[in-house]
Length: 220
Image (cartoon, rainbow, N blue to C red; front, side, top):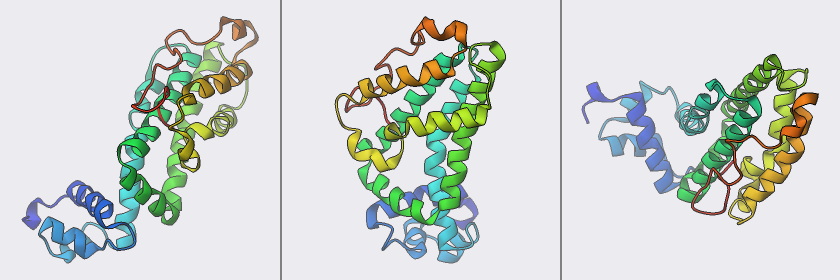
């Protein structure tokens, strides 16, 4: 490859393939450069160190999870319906990563231990998204008054078994979708304003709507 057409995105795409092939313990910047048919100095012009390159790979993987969720946040729909579908979409994205590309997921788990700041920023971004939905629900009178950010943290903690990688071994269970809906049935009344509690589950967010190839629910 000509250095003139070498881009950050192409380097990251190739680094992901190299990490998947060799594993994080053996993959090097030289391996990435060789796969791109450039000198390792060309890679270093975009990323100052091996650690910076690996952190960027993690960031890219996590952006694939968070970016599609922005559309749900921005919708003009009841807040409880959006929050339900946001959680289901988060589950679907995380479960898909585990089930469709287990080698890359294993690599991510290793790299994430080295890229704590990147992971922390990702979690804060997810909290920002949930906070926005909750704040809008409070403004609409659908959710009870409270601190949207604190409430968002509580929602993510309560649903952690369905999206936190530490629980990935359980995500292939066939009843994972029903388990999430049982948890949601307990979360929702705590969010709703007094006059909205009895309306039940959000109409557009039917149980099992978000599915993957394994199990009823998507992934976390």
